[in-house]
Image 1 (cartoon, rainbow, N blue to C red):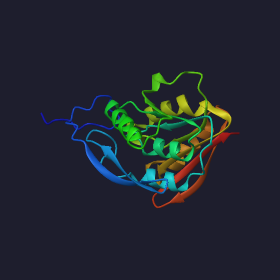
Image 2 (tube, rainbow, N blue to C red):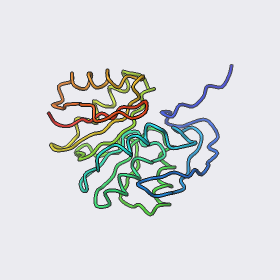
Image 3 (tube, rainbow, N blue to C red):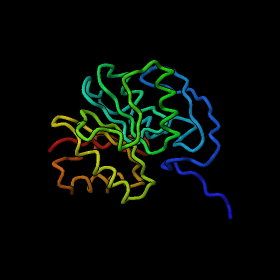
Image 4 (tube, rainbow, N blue to C red):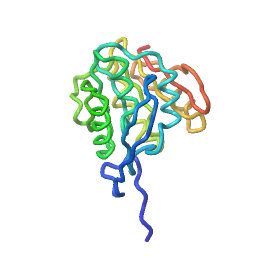
Amino acid sequence: MSEQPDHYFTAEPASLEERRHIAVQLDGQAVTLTTAKGVYSPERLDPGTAVLLAGAPDPSPTGDLLDLGCGWGPIALTLALRSPAARVWGVDVNRRALDLARTNAASLGLETITFCEPDEVPGDVRFATIWSNPPIHVGKAALHALLERWLPRLTDDGVAHLVVQRHLGSDSLQKWINAQDWGLRCTRLSSAKAFRILEVRRA
């Protein structure tokens, strides 16, 4: 039987870690960060993430900010660079990714980020900003459950921005969010390359 490949949403990847260093641009800065096998987009800044970082409005300068599905950390790191007075949460189920993200935050001297598994975020925390390149490949049911858990935790004036490929269901996801009874409204903020940025805020 052939070995099954790791998925980036695996809690404990079975592959050898094989850490590597890649050069990326975050918030206009050229930085070198650490990635590894068994996590999402280990060889480069994912194009969708790049679209989100370039196209999303500035995050809230204060409060709690969330990177949902943080991987090795580029979104959370950018949130912390842009909003140094805020508290940033990077959430993922992949423990290898969380270890890498912590390494990357330390390398940039960023002390306002907590990288953790979902259940480690206190239940009473509400988010002024949520940024996410959501894990579409977990399947529709799991993706919907993920968004149902986190999007309603926006503050009254909080805003979420999600980047989704057009051919992977960005329009249907927008319609689905609007059909829920969360008191939230999802609109299309922009399109770039093969991606759409969706904006979610209180109706």
